[in-house]
Length: 398
Picture 1 (tube, one colour):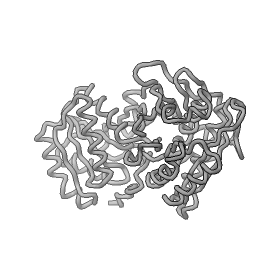
Picture 2: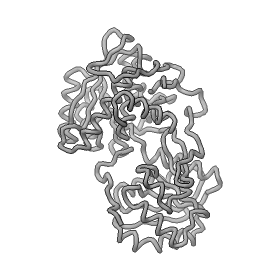
Picture 3: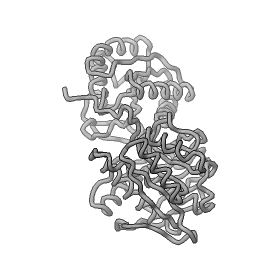
Picture 4: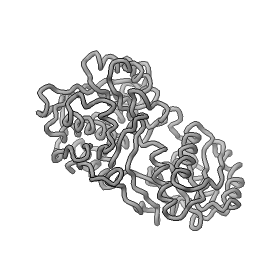
Protein backbone atom coordinates (compact mmCIF):
# COMPACT_ATOMS: atom_id res chain seq x y z
CA UNK A 1 0.00 0.00 0.00
CA UNK A 2 1.50 3.38 -0.88
CA UNK A 3 2.00 5.98 1.80
CA UNK A 4 -1.38 7.46 2.65
CA UNK A 5 -0.80 10.38 4.93
CA UNK A 6 0.68 13.38 3.12
CA UNK A 7 -1.76 15.81 4.78
CA UNK A 8 -1.53 19.51 5.39
CA UNK A 9 -1.69 19.08 9.20
CA UNK A 10 -0.92 22.30 11.01
CA UNK A 11 -0.89 24.16 7.69
CA UNK A 12 -4.63 23.66 7.29
CA UNK A 13 -5.56 25.57 4.22
CA UNK A 14 -6.53 24.46 0.96
CA UNK A 15 -7.97 24.05 -1.80
CA UNK A 16 -13.14 37.78 -11.66
CA UNK A 17 -15.19 39.14 -8.87
CA UNK A 18 -17.82 41.82 -8.93
CA UNK A 19 -20.63 43.04 -6.73
CA UNK A 20 -24.16 42.23 -7.83
CA UNK A 21 -25.33 44.70 -10.45
CA UNK A 22 -22.35 46.96 -9.71
CA UNK A 23 -19.53 45.93 -12.02
CA UNK A 24 -18.84 43.80 -15.05
CA UNK A 25 -15.20 42.96 -15.54
CA UNK A 26 -13.59 43.69 -18.88
CA UNK A 27 -12.71 41.14 -21.52
CA UNK A 28 -9.71 39.00 -20.66
CA UNK A 29 -6.25 39.79 -21.97
CA UNK A 30 -4.28 37.09 -23.76
CA UNK A 31 -0.78 38.08 -22.67
CA UNK A 32 0.86 37.79 -19.27
CA UNK A 33 1.20 41.15 -17.55
CA UNK A 34 4.59 42.21 -16.25
CA UNK A 35 5.73 44.80 -13.75
CA UNK A 36 3.26 47.11 -12.03
CA UNK A 37 -0.23 46.86 -13.50
CA UNK A 38 -2.51 49.87 -13.32
CA UNK A 39 -5.61 51.18 -15.01
CA UNK A 40 -7.44 54.47 -15.07
CA UNK A 41 -10.56 54.44 -12.90
CA UNK A 42 -9.27 56.23 -9.81
CA UNK A 43 -6.87 59.17 -10.03
CA UNK A 44 -4.51 57.70 -7.42
CA UNK A 45 -3.62 54.00 -7.53
CA UNK A 46 -4.90 51.95 -4.61
CA UNK A 47 -1.94 50.26 -2.95
CA UNK A 48 -2.53 46.54 -2.44
CA UNK A 49 0.00 44.34 -0.66
CA UNK A 50 0.26 40.73 -1.80
CA UNK A 51 1.95 38.48 0.78
CA UNK A 52 3.26 35.23 -0.71
CA UNK A 53 5.18 32.33 0.89
CA UNK A 54 8.33 32.50 -1.28
CA UNK A 55 11.74 32.39 0.33
CA UNK A 56 11.05 29.50 2.69
CA UNK A 57 13.48 27.17 0.94
CA UNK A 58 10.59 24.82 0.11
CA UNK A 59 10.01 24.47 -3.62
CA UNK A 60 6.25 24.09 -3.27
CA UNK A 61 6.03 27.44 -1.47
CA UNK A 62 7.80 29.13 -4.37
CA UNK A 63 5.39 27.53 -6.85
CA UNK A 64 2.43 28.69 -4.77
CA UNK A 65 3.87 32.22 -4.66
CA UNK A 66 4.33 32.35 -8.44
CA UNK A 67 0.77 31.19 -9.04
CA UNK A 68 -0.70 33.70 -6.61
CA UNK A 69 1.19 36.65 -8.06
CA UNK A 70 0.45 35.70 -11.66
CA UNK A 71 -3.26 35.30 -10.93
CA UNK A 72 -3.43 38.59 -9.04
CA UNK A 73 -1.84 40.42 -11.95
CA UNK A 74 -4.22 38.73 -14.37
CA UNK A 75 -7.13 39.97 -12.27
CA UNK A 76 -5.78 43.53 -12.28
CA UNK A 77 -5.58 43.42 -16.07
CA UNK A 78 -9.23 42.35 -16.18
CA UNK A 79 -10.42 45.12 -13.89
CA UNK A 80 -10.24 47.68 -16.66
CA UNK A 81 -11.00 51.10 -15.16
CA UNK A 82 -9.60 50.52 -11.69
CA UNK A 83 -6.06 51.64 -10.85
CA UNK A 84 -4.15 49.22 -8.58
CA UNK A 85 -0.57 49.50 -7.33
CA UNK A 86 0.35 45.89 -6.51
CA UNK A 87 3.27 45.42 -4.12
CA UNK A 88 4.54 41.89 -3.44
CA UNK A 89 6.16 40.84 -0.14
CA UNK A 90 7.80 37.47 0.56
CA UNK A 91 6.94 35.90 3.93
CA UNK A 92 9.09 32.75 3.72
CA UNK A 93 6.00 30.91 5.02
CA UNK A 94 7.01 32.15 8.46
CA UNK A 95 4.44 33.74 10.82
CA UNK A 96 6.88 36.24 12.32
CA UNK A 97 8.12 37.26 8.89
CA UNK A 98 4.52 37.57 7.70
CA UNK A 99 3.77 39.91 10.61
CA UNK A 100 6.82 42.02 9.81
CA UNK A 101 5.92 42.17 6.11
CA UNK A 102 2.33 43.14 6.91
CA UNK A 103 3.57 46.01 9.08
CA UNK A 104 6.06 47.07 6.40
CA UNK A 105 3.34 46.94 3.75
CA UNK A 106 1.11 49.28 5.77
CA UNK A 107 4.11 51.55 6.44
CA UNK A 108 4.59 51.60 2.66
CA UNK A 109 0.99 52.72 2.20
CA UNK A 110 -0.94 49.48 1.63
CA UNK A 111 -4.67 50.00 2.01
CA UNK A 112 -5.50 46.29 2.09
CA UNK A 113 -3.48 43.07 2.35
CA UNK A 114 -4.09 40.05 0.11
CA UNK A 115 -2.57 36.98 1.75
CA UNK A 116 -0.63 35.54 3.44
CA UNK A 117 -1.07 31.90 2.50
CA UNK A 118 -0.90 29.82 5.67
CA UNK A 119 -3.22 30.21 8.63
CA UNK A 120 -0.53 30.79 11.24
CA UNK A 121 0.98 33.51 9.04
CA UNK A 122 -2.38 35.19 8.56
CA UNK A 123 -3.13 35.21 12.27
CA UNK A 124 0.10 37.04 13.09
CA UNK A 125 -0.13 39.35 10.09
CA UNK A 126 -3.66 40.33 11.07
CA UNK A 127 -2.64 41.03 14.65
CA UNK A 128 0.30 43.14 13.48
CA UNK A 129 -1.94 45.58 11.60
CA UNK A 130 -5.18 45.21 13.56
CA UNK A 131 -4.93 48.69 15.04
CA UNK A 132 -4.24 50.36 11.72
CA UNK A 133 -7.57 49.89 9.98
CA UNK A 134 -6.27 47.50 7.30
CA UNK A 135 -8.09 44.31 6.35
CA UNK A 136 -6.20 41.07 5.70
CA UNK A 137 -7.68 38.72 3.10
CA UNK A 138 -5.85 35.45 3.71
CA UNK A 139 -5.74 32.52 1.33
CA UNK A 140 -6.20 30.15 4.27
CA UNK A 141 -9.38 28.18 4.92
CA UNK A 142 -8.73 27.76 8.66
CA UNK A 143 -11.77 29.08 10.57
CA UNK A 144 -9.72 29.50 13.74
CA UNK A 145 -7.92 32.54 12.33
CA UNK A 146 -10.98 34.35 10.95
CA UNK A 147 -12.36 37.40 12.71
CA UNK A 148 -11.51 40.99 13.46
CA UNK A 149 -9.60 42.33 10.47
CA UNK A 150 -8.80 38.85 9.07
CA UNK A 151 -10.99 37.38 6.33
CA UNK A 152 -10.32 34.00 4.73
CA UNK A 153 -10.64 33.23 1.02
CA UNK A 154 -10.08 29.47 1.09
CA UNK A 155 -13.00 27.09 0.71
CA UNK A 156 -14.07 26.19 4.25
CA UNK A 157 -15.38 22.96 5.70
CA UNK A 158 -18.51 24.82 6.79
CA UNK A 159 -19.32 26.00 3.28
CA UNK A 160 -18.69 22.55 1.81
CA UNK A 161 -20.62 20.70 4.50
CA UNK A 162 -23.61 23.03 4.23
CA UNK A 163 -23.81 22.55 0.47
CA UNK A 164 -23.60 18.78 0.60
CA UNK A 165 -25.84 18.27 3.62
CA UNK A 166 -28.53 20.48 2.12
CA UNK A 167 -28.38 18.58 -1.16
CA UNK A 168 -28.50 15.21 0.59
CA UNK A 169 -31.55 16.13 2.64
CA UNK A 170 -33.39 17.44 -0.42
CA UNK A 171 -32.76 14.04 -2.00
CA UNK A 172 -34.33 12.28 0.98
CA UNK A 173 -31.10 11.25 2.71
CA UNK A 174 -31.97 12.51 6.17
CA UNK A 175 -30.11 9.96 8.35
CA UNK A 176 -26.41 10.62 7.97
CA UNK A 177 -23.41 9.04 9.72
CA UNK A 178 -20.24 11.10 10.23
CA UNK A 179 -16.85 9.36 9.95
CA UNK A 180 -13.77 11.41 10.81
CA UNK A 181 -10.01 11.32 11.30
CA UNK A 182 -8.80 11.63 14.89
CA UNK A 183 -6.86 14.76 14.01
CA UNK A 184 -7.37 18.49 14.52
CA UNK A 185 -8.61 18.83 10.94
CA UNK A 186 -10.84 15.80 11.37
CA UNK A 187 -12.45 17.30 14.46
CA UNK A 188 -13.11 20.59 12.69
CA UNK A 189 -14.58 18.71 9.75
CA UNK A 190 -16.78 16.54 11.97
CA UNK A 191 -18.17 19.58 13.73
CA UNK A 192 -18.90 21.28 10.41
CA UNK A 193 -20.74 18.23 9.10
CA UNK A 194 -22.80 17.75 12.25
CA UNK A 195 -23.90 21.39 12.27
CA UNK A 196 -24.68 21.32 8.56
CA UNK A 197 -26.79 18.17 8.76
CA UNK A 198 -28.88 19.52 11.62
CA UNK A 199 -29.28 22.91 9.94
CA UNK A 200 -30.46 21.19 6.76
CA UNK A 201 -33.15 19.30 8.67
CA UNK A 202 -31.39 15.95 8.82
CA UNK A 203 -30.29 13.79 11.75
CA UNK A 204 -26.93 12.37 12.80
CA UNK A 205 -27.53 8.62 12.62
CA UNK A 206 -24.13 7.68 14.09
CA UNK A 207 -20.54 8.84 14.41
CA UNK A 208 -17.32 6.95 13.92
CA UNK A 209 -13.62 7.77 13.90
CA UNK A 210 -10.20 6.20 13.47
CA UNK A 211 -6.62 6.91 14.45
CA UNK A 212 -4.86 8.65 11.62
CA UNK A 213 -2.69 5.78 10.43
CA UNK A 214 -3.08 2.77 8.19
CA UNK A 215 -3.27 0.44 11.17
CA UNK A 216 -5.75 2.79 12.88
CA UNK A 217 -8.11 2.51 9.93
CA UNK A 218 -7.79 -1.25 9.76
CA UNK A 219 -8.52 -1.57 13.49
CA UNK A 220 -11.54 0.76 13.45
CA UNK A 221 -13.28 -0.01 10.19
CA UNK A 222 -15.29 -3.04 11.32
CA UNK A 223 -16.90 -1.01 14.13
CA UNK A 224 -17.52 1.91 11.78
CA UNK A 225 -19.19 -0.35 9.26
CA UNK A 226 -21.28 -2.04 11.94
CA UNK A 227 -22.50 1.36 13.18
CA UNK A 228 -23.38 2.45 9.66
CA UNK A 229 -25.52 -0.64 9.17
CA UNK A 230 -27.14 -0.84 12.62
CA UNK A 231 -28.03 2.86 12.62
CA UNK A 232 -29.76 2.53 9.23
CA UNK A 233 -27.74 5.47 7.99
CA UNK A 234 -28.71 6.44 4.47
CA UNK A 235 -25.41 8.21 3.86
CA UNK A 236 -21.89 8.25 5.29
CA UNK A 237 -20.20 11.68 5.33
CA UNK A 238 -16.39 11.37 5.44
CA UNK A 239 -13.75 13.93 6.42
CA UNK A 240 -10.94 11.86 4.83
CA UNK A 241 -8.99 13.21 1.86
CA UNK A 242 -7.27 11.61 -1.10
CA UNK A 243 -3.79 12.24 0.30
CA UNK A 244 -4.71 10.54 3.56
CA UNK A 245 -7.21 7.92 4.60
CA UNK A 246 -9.80 8.05 1.82
CA UNK A 247 -8.61 5.30 -0.58
CA UNK A 248 -8.09 2.69 2.12
CA UNK A 249 -11.08 3.70 4.24
CA UNK A 250 -13.64 3.57 1.44
CA UNK A 251 -12.25 0.29 0.16
CA UNK A 252 -12.42 -1.37 3.58
CA UNK A 253 -15.86 0.04 4.37
CA UNK A 254 -17.14 -1.43 1.12
CA UNK A 255 -15.53 -4.79 1.94
CA UNK A 256 -17.18 -4.66 5.38
CA UNK A 257 -20.66 -4.41 3.91
CA UNK A 258 -21.32 -0.67 3.58
CA UNK A 259 -22.44 -0.86 -0.03
CA UNK A 260 -21.99 2.49 -1.84
CA UNK A 261 -24.84 1.58 -4.17
CA UNK A 262 -27.30 1.60 -1.24
CA UNK A 263 -25.53 3.85 1.29
CA UNK A 264 -24.43 7.15 -0.23
CA UNK A 265 -20.80 8.07 0.37
CA UNK A 266 -20.23 11.84 0.70
CA UNK A 267 -16.85 13.57 0.94
CA UNK A 268 -15.91 16.79 2.69
CA UNK A 269 -12.81 17.13 0.51
CA UNK A 270 -12.14 17.11 -3.22
CA UNK A 271 -12.19 13.50 -4.45
CA UNK A 272 -10.97 14.36 -7.96
CA UNK A 273 -7.49 15.58 -6.95
CA UNK A 274 -5.31 13.83 -7.92
CA UNK A 275 -7.20 12.44 -10.90
CA UNK A 276 -5.83 8.97 -10.15
CA UNK A 277 -8.20 8.77 -7.18
CA UNK A 278 -11.13 8.55 -9.59
CA UNK A 279 -10.13 4.96 -10.34
CA UNK A 280 -10.47 3.82 -6.70
CA UNK A 281 -13.33 1.30 -6.30
CA UNK A 282 -14.57 2.73 -3.01
CA UNK A 283 -15.26 6.24 -4.34
CA UNK A 284 -17.42 5.18 -7.27
CA UNK A 285 -20.82 6.85 -6.92
CA UNK A 286 -19.53 9.19 -4.20
CA UNK A 287 -20.53 12.84 -3.91
CA UNK A 288 -18.27 15.80 -3.22
CA UNK A 289 -18.39 19.57 -3.78
CA UNK A 290 -16.23 21.67 -6.05
CA UNK A 291 -16.14 25.20 -7.46
CA UNK A 292 -18.02 25.96 -10.67
CA UNK A 293 -16.05 23.74 -13.08
CA UNK A 294 -16.86 25.85 -16.14
CA UNK A 295 -15.37 29.02 -14.65
CA UNK A 296 -12.43 27.11 -13.22
CA UNK A 297 -11.61 25.58 -16.60
CA UNK A 298 -11.76 28.96 -18.33
CA UNK A 299 -9.37 30.41 -15.76
CA UNK A 300 -7.00 27.46 -16.11
CA UNK A 301 -6.97 27.83 -19.90
CA UNK A 302 -6.32 31.57 -19.73
CA UNK A 303 -3.55 31.15 -17.21
CA UNK A 304 -1.91 28.40 -19.29
CA UNK A 305 -2.01 30.61 -22.38
CA UNK A 306 -0.63 33.61 -20.52
CA UNK A 307 2.13 31.99 -18.49
CA UNK A 308 2.93 28.77 -20.31
CA UNK A 309 2.08 26.49 -17.39
CA UNK A 310 -0.95 25.30 -15.49
CA UNK A 311 -1.81 27.36 -12.39
CA UNK A 312 -1.26 26.04 -8.91
CA UNK A 313 -4.53 24.75 -7.44
CA UNK A 314 -4.73 27.79 -5.13
CA UNK A 315 -3.92 30.49 -7.70
CA UNK A 316 -7.57 31.26 -8.35
CA UNK A 317 -7.94 32.52 -4.79
CA UNK A 318 -5.62 35.43 -5.60
CA UNK A 319 -7.66 36.26 -8.68
CA UNK A 320 -10.87 36.21 -6.63
CA UNK A 321 -9.41 38.38 -3.90
CA UNK A 322 -7.94 40.95 -6.27
CA UNK A 323 -11.09 41.16 -8.35
CA UNK A 324 -13.18 41.69 -5.22
CA UNK A 325 -10.84 44.51 -4.23
CA UNK A 326 -11.28 46.06 -7.66
CA UNK A 327 -15.06 45.82 -7.47
CA UNK A 328 -15.10 47.54 -4.09
CA UNK A 329 -12.75 50.28 -5.25
CA UNK A 330 -14.94 50.90 -8.28
CA UNK A 331 -17.98 51.13 -6.02
CA UNK A 332 -16.59 53.41 -3.34
CA UNK A 333 -12.91 54.08 -3.84
CA UNK A 334 -10.38 53.00 -1.18
CA UNK A 335 -13.03 53.63 1.48
CA UNK A 336 -14.88 50.63 0.10
CA UNK A 337 -12.14 48.34 1.39
CA UNK A 338 -13.73 48.25 4.84
CA UNK A 339 -15.30 45.40 6.76
CA UNK A 340 -18.77 46.58 5.76
CA UNK A 341 -17.72 46.69 2.11
CA UNK A 342 -16.15 43.25 2.18
CA UNK A 343 -19.20 41.71 3.85
CA UNK A 344 -21.90 43.04 1.52
CA UNK A 345 -24.51 40.31 1.18
CA UNK A 346 -24.59 40.20 -2.62
CA UNK A 347 -21.02 38.99 -2.63
CA UNK A 348 -18.80 38.53 -5.66
CA UNK A 349 -18.33 36.14 -8.55
CA UNK A 350 -14.84 34.92 -9.32
CA UNK A 351 -13.00 32.17 -11.11
CA UNK A 352 -14.17 29.74 -8.42
CA UNK A 353 -17.82 30.86 -8.65
CA UNK A 354 -19.80 33.09 -6.32
CA UNK A 355 -18.49 33.89 -2.86
CA UNK A 356 -19.04 36.34 -0.05
CA UNK A 357 -17.38 37.22 3.22
CA UNK A 358 -19.28 36.89 6.48
CA UNK A 359 -18.95 39.28 9.44
CA UNK A 360 -17.17 36.46 11.29
CA UNK A 361 -14.33 36.63 8.76
CA UNK A 362 -15.41 33.31 7.25
CA UNK A 363 -16.69 32.98 3.71
CA UNK A 364 -19.50 31.29 1.90
CA UNK A 365 -18.94 29.88 -1.58
CA UNK A 366 -21.44 28.71 -4.16
CA UNK A 367 -20.37 25.17 -4.99
CA UNK A 368 -21.43 22.49 -7.44
CA UNK A 369 -22.19 18.95 -6.30
CA UNK A 370 -20.38 16.29 -8.29
CA UNK A 371 -20.51 12.50 -8.41
CA UNK A 372 -17.90 9.99 -9.56
CA UNK A 373 -19.51 7.90 -12.29
CA UNK A 374 -17.47 5.33 -14.18
CA UNK A 375 -14.25 6.95 -12.97
CA UNK A 376 -15.35 10.35 -14.29
CA UNK A 377 -16.56 13.51 -12.52
CA UNK A 378 -20.19 14.35 -13.30
CA UNK A 379 -21.88 17.49 -11.97
CA UNK A 380 -25.27 16.47 -10.58
CA UNK A 381 -26.26 19.85 -9.15
CA UNK A 382 -24.74 23.00 -10.69
CA UNK A 383 -23.17 25.77 -8.65
CA UNK A 384 -25.64 28.58 -7.84
CA UNK A 385 -25.22 31.88 -9.67
CA UNK A 386 -26.27 34.16 -6.81
CA UNK A 387 -26.97 34.20 -3.08
CA UNK A 388 -30.53 34.20 -1.76
CA UNK A 389 -32.25 34.02 -5.09
CA UNK A 390 -31.28 37.55 -6.18
CA UNK A 391 -29.95 38.57 -9.56
CA UNK A 392 -26.61 37.11 -10.50
CA UNK A 393 -23.47 39.11 -9.70
CA UNK A 394 -21.53 40.50 -12.62
CA UNK A 395 -19.47 37.86 -14.36
CA UNK A 396 -15.83 37.90 -15.26
CA UNK A 397 -15.02 38.59 -18.87
CA UNK A 398 -14.14 35.02 -19.82
